[in-house]
Image (cartoon, rainbow, N blue to C red; front, side, top):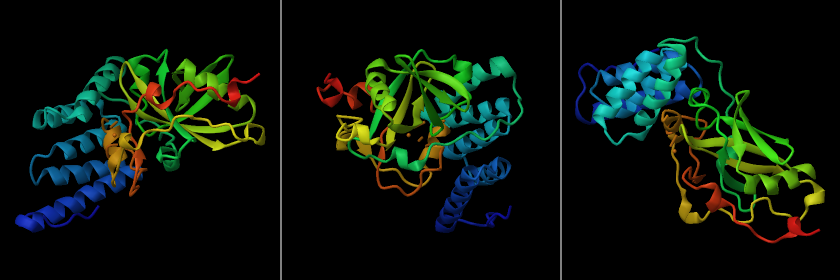
Length: 283
């Protein structure tokens, strides 16, 4: 990896080089080149303390299986910025994971990421849901915002699977509607928008409407425009570095880049789904 010369830089030139290094680090992480991403963030930290660089370095080390070292860098990030939710959340997630696996593990297989398109608002086709009956914190520590979620119907429940692992069940009143539409041929894509030890939110998007469901809206109440906020390059990756806040990245799922508007992770299932009388309720 070739880095810009930084030894004798000051002022605007130093700012420019830091920006270049940050962009390189984000691009490398997005491509899954975690070793090079770690080196790039270390190079950036040579220019001075920076909470975001510490978060990115911690994420890269986590992906490389260096759990103890990753936690140390999250702790540094939190010391630099006591309000840093990404660092705070991941310190707790790593604590749970390390109690099971120790300070070092084999690098995990690359997680399946949700398509960028599902995070973009489309009235009637996109909604949010909370998961219930969550998996243990140790299991949830292996998944991140931006990971794809497979929805599996089973009886009157809709199970959520991420990276081959059961992570929870879609809240009942959301599941009830989707189960009817799934049974008649609709198809949906889903992804994690935020998660903690006690709560996991997912976004669900209709990707195919069966002709039998013509005129039936998957999500009667769309997210309000006030609940939406712009995301910029690297946002999702920072969330994973929550890391989050995504696909809140966070530079974490860098899968999301240069989108004008992305659904906010804070919207809850109750806000996104309201009971309505429509075709689905008719006999």
